[in-house]
Image (cartoon, rainbow, N blue to C red; front, side):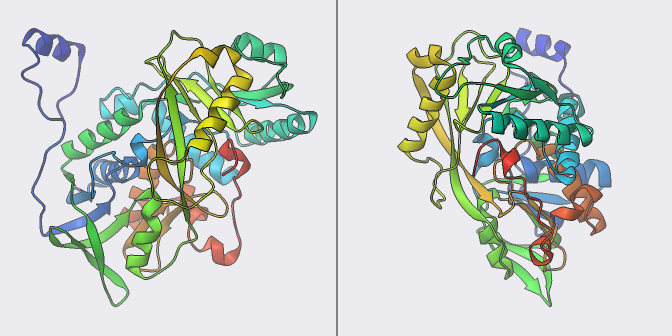
Length: 414
């Protein structure tokens, strides 16, 4: 992989930018691969990259029925944090945050990771006690967490209205958390995977899984059959569809989760703000847009757009906290298809079909988990044994009852 550098930027600028190479190939689909990954989003691409880089498996194909990063990887609010309650979740997401901290250097691609912190607000004495419990649990898990008073919050975010209908009584902040550029994460992993020999095949839909004697042997696509020793699917909201092809069911509900941005303005939000009570989270992008989101739409859907009532609710919630934004215009809106499990914890690892693996059920946590998701799934596929960080995330927990309920740590209810 030819590295980007200041010198290369200057050289290409002086040459009229005519010598840049495509950052990934457009290869022909081969008849056979060691591993086929279905889904060219962040999780599929990162899994392929770590399989090739860390485990030496390079005969890999990543298939997508659309275009690279066209699903949830490009339809989120770009937040990365590890302030989770349960030890299993905390360890996994902090591993992901640590990978994000060095990701730009690792894949030689600027993912614009900005550790501006995530500030969670409390609006009642009861909620403040719950926030203290949450923050203490995070500290016990070995992750940074700092309780803040209303005066601290006002110093961090001067525009916040502390005396709205929902007065702010305190909160906590994880300062290592932040945001990055979602497209850059997908493109960076694609470029790095391609440089390690991975074939990224766009506009190639998986139509069936070939299974013989309880073992996966390949994938049927709209371009023909592919033989494969191992298959993994990382398809977000369509996880139930792929599981159905393999003959088993997963407890996942797919809903639209909306996000939206305002017109760009000068820097005015220092952190990512989150409030469970008013049901909204917001940050400011590097381009100056105010990015906001809230709860998932209250109906099952595969639509990537969502409904107007949620837009109105999110905007109204934002104005409760920051009335100064009332003169802003909303620029655009979109939705991703979230795959929500009963305990809002992902399903990762082996499936009832031999040599078939899955990474799904991410709900609202998929983007922040991309590096760790890829790293741990690559280990699981290479060794046919769950990585220690995801040993408790398997499908079998719904039979044993060993659930990991992270509903509260989602930031808002889903």
